[in-house]
Every structure is written in C-alpha cells, then in structure tokens.
Image 1 (cartoon, rainbow, N blue to C red):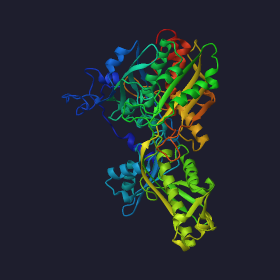
Image 2: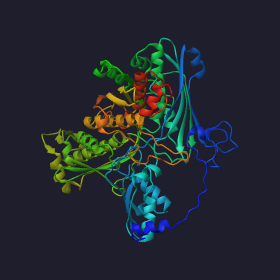
Image 3: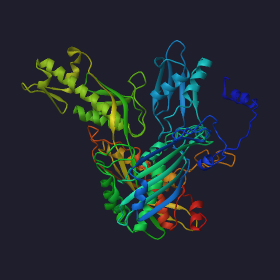
Length: 633
C-alpha cells in the first residue's frame, strides 16, 4: 500500500474467524484448580518435585533466612493481611515510535525512542538474522520511559517492511495501541504476616507474592521478593513468589519493577503493627531498621546505608510535627532499591581549544547528561561548561547496558570518571614530554599541569592546543562492568483529606526523603524524588487497567486512565539525605527508583488513618473509598 487509506481499505477486506475462549484475567483465577491453561507446554519451575501437569504458574521461588516458625513462636503480637495492586501504566507521554531504513548492501539504520539502543540492535539483528555491524541504532530524545521503553516492539517489524518495500518506514503507536499492546506494570496479590515482641522488636516476617506476567512468563516477582523485607533487620524471614500468566499484555518494567507492589503490602502491615503496639510508626521502623552489617534476605550484608538517616529526617521534619485537621490522615512508608551497575562505555574527545565532548552509551531519560558533565569536570578540574555530553549511537561508542534500574549515574558515572582520569593522565604525559620530565613529576591541579621539578605550568587548553605536536588528539576512554551496588532507601510522609460523602481523596501535604549517596545535581535529584512520588500517588489513588468480563481493556487512553495532573497535587517537599556509597568514587547511589516505592503505602495508610477502615486494595478511587466508609469494602 502506498497510502494509509489504501492499507485501511485492504484491512477491511480481511475476514477473520475467532475461536472465543474464556479469558483468565487475575492471578487468583489463573492459580485456581481447573483454570483454563494458557500454555499446555508450560510446567512450573522451582518446585521440589518435577510437575507432571501444565500450569499457569511459570515459576515458584523462595527466599528465606533464619527459622520462620521459631520467629513466630517468639512473637507476642502478630498481624497478617492480604493486599491487591492493579495493573498500571508507566505513563510516558510520547508513544513508541521509530523510523528505519534498510540497506541490502550497506548499513541499515534505526532511529527510535528507547532506553537501550544496544538492546534494540541486538533484538532486531537476531530476529532478522543480520550481523550486528550492519545495523546502526540511534536513540532519539525520549519523551518518557520509566521502564516502558526497555522493550522492543516496532523496530523489527518496521525494518522488515523497509526491506520488503525498499523504502524508509516510520511507525508510531497511537495511544490505544500503547495501552493494549505494550507492557504495563504487574498486578499483584500478596499475603504478608509479621510477628513482634511487645517491645516492638520484629521477630518474623513472612510473605507470599503472586505477580501477573501477562500472556508470557517473566514478571518482576523476583525483585518483589528481594526488596519486600529489606528495610528491616529481622532474623527470621521467609517469602514465596509466583510468576503467573494471564490473558493480558506481557508486562514490562515500571520504575523499580516489582518493588512498589511488594513493599506496599509490607509497609501497610508495619503501620498496622505500630497501632497495635501503641508505637509511633517511625520510631518502630527505627528500632528495626536495616543498617551497616544487616544481612539481607537476598544475599549480601549491607555496607553503610542511609535508612536510619532518612527515618530521622522524616521524624524531624516540619511536616511530621504538623497537626492533622478533621477528616485528614497521615501515612508513613519506607522503600528500598538495589541500584546495581552493569556495562557502560564512555569516551571523552578533547578539542584544540580545551573544550571536550563526552560520548556516552546510556540514553538520558532523567537528566543523566548533566550529571556526567559535572562528574567529568570534577575529575578534570575544569568548569562543566567546557564539556558537552552527548549520547552516542551504536557505532560511535562501545556497548552500554540500557538506562534503567537507576544504574546510569552510578555505573556510567564510573565510566565517565575513568575516561576523565584517562584524559588527565594523557595531559600529564604530554606536559611531561614538553618539559622533558617524567609524568610522575607532573601534578594536575584545577585543570593545570604543574612541573614539580621546576616552575613550569600548562593549562588544559594549552596542552590541547599543542596536541598535534605531542602525539595527536587526546581522547580518554572508560569501559567498565560496574561491580557492587548503590542500595538506596526512601521514606515518605503523606497527609490526605477524605470527603466522606463522596470518597474523594486529596493529597494535602507530601514529603519525600531519600538517600542519594551524593547528589551530583541536587535540583535534578529533587525532581526524581518528586516524579517518583507523583507516579506512586497516581498508582495509589486512581490508576488501573479496567477490563470487561470478556477480557477487553476499557480505558485505553489518558482520558479514562487517570494519571495525576498538577492541580491534583500539593508541592512535594524533597529532603536529600547523603550517606556516601563506598562502591562509587563520589559516593553516588542512584535516585530514580526508590522514590516510587513508598507512595502506595504512604497514601494507602493515610486514607486508612483518615477513615478508620483497613485498606487492602488499590487504587483508592472515590467509589472504592466510599464503599469502605459505608462498610461495603
């Protein structure tokens, strides 16, 4: 078809006969005895004995520490409850889009909106049986991702069409397609049980998490299990996770994938425990907080972390001291994310006038270019404005893992520092050659080479200007597979007002406290805290995919899928805590994930506190809150 109109006419001529099957739309249905089986060849992995019958449970996994039965025997107070979180969209404004050009004898090109252009190249090349070197991918400026653009949907299809037609092809999803055909965050059902002594010491934490994977296996239930109890130093823990297929779109990452759902359940129950014990919820958390030396359920012992400092900052804030008005409630919640590293590549090319270009392989979705610029400038001892950060395509920089999981400032930042230090080493070597001394006799101070064997000095610009006479262009490289992690904790406070005649909830005050390790660009860090809080507030109050009885999505657009707008929210106060991360040269932890984790429980418990009725299911839309107030929840 040469026009869209012709293509639409052709589509109308295609007759399709459907065999209508009963959909399985929820983990409860999918795990029930006699449920329709989505994949007859799928058998549950992770069971003690190999199963002989197919199941909708793709994987069962568990994490444990200590003796859970002994922990509950020791407990004097026990709380337990089931919770539900809905399918939620990442909320990126720009839809998935790409432009491609296939070249039979040359290099094919892809321009796309992505969080990982090397992943796009790998997936597309594999599907089309192409050599990686014959495919170049350029990451466009992105209009939001939040994990939803770590996936590959359009690019292979577009390139096949370009190969077939011999013409460049552009594909853009409309909003309806984005909602129906791309991966949202998982819906979950969770059961959590916590035991403590009367003095507030938590003796046991147990959980069972079931995550929707969509039509194919691969939910983030593992991350949910790994993060759920991690804010607490408890000797006895046990958690099970189930990856469950249902008749929905295959899920994708959504900011701290898996953690908000799991920690919602745990944090709601910790607040309930505080009430039963007659304790302040922050003081109870301080008593049981993870700290340096705490053994995590997923493996490592913590080095120094900032949860205690975050809790203390929240406790001492003006917000926490403020009295509540009538029909208002307050919620407190903590959250944790790993912030792991991965592969990153950077090079810094210096110009004859002393300016330079930082070429990195990690798409910028949250202001990371500014952070890279500042870290490189710090290492080189020059003004940040002398360096221009850009995102290289898959030809112009070596492999870099995608931007996600708050890895970029942590891992790519280390590659930037390595590249900057390489530049400085070359600068010292060039100065040494001009002075006829060794590089060890040259010091680098504030962008200037100093001859310790004399009084000579050369600025960075002077060394760059003479580079053609001392060995050629100066270019520093940093290629790392970052080890370690930047564990980050957050603590949020939320005050809500509830209209008990309508069930409408208004957030009237909100404070986000988080450990950044080191805030390279404080304003951008505050923006990450606030953005995470807003997305979590939306998830808690209004956002959910609504399906008909026959499995059709009924609110595939931002008119009916209600994300928060500015008028829905107060100004969100951000408090930056800085407890340096020993695994990063400047102490960075990463800040993009932890901020979305506490809001679900902070908002949820604020509503519970306001109406005096237990909250177990999200979102807390006006009809649901009204029914809770009326005793119909």
